[in-house]
Image (cartoon, rainbow, N blue to C red; front, top):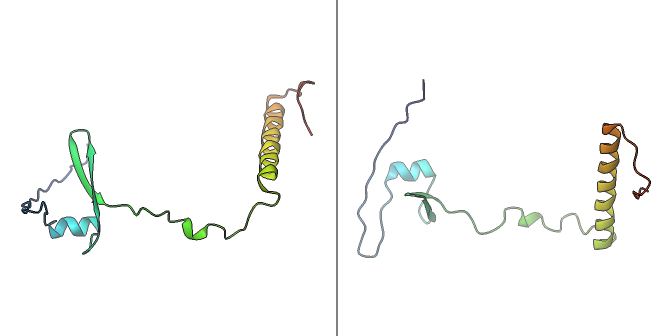
Length: 106
């Protein structure tokens, strides 16, 4: 049997400034506090209110912590190329075939 979905309805009046009071139960459900921002998202024929996502990247504070890749862009590209060659060789081994003579392998 399917799970029964409980539905509750809350309402609020729009002020002359276009503002609404978000009912306490909704604020609690969404974890909203005074000063928090919300997004109004249109999904087809529904409009959903949800906490606004921060515009900042949560990983930004870690940028540069490991320094740069040794050798720069050229070495990164060489490393990726080697990884791809390794993967290609692994596929050849899994398939039981030998690399063709025209293929470049290190």
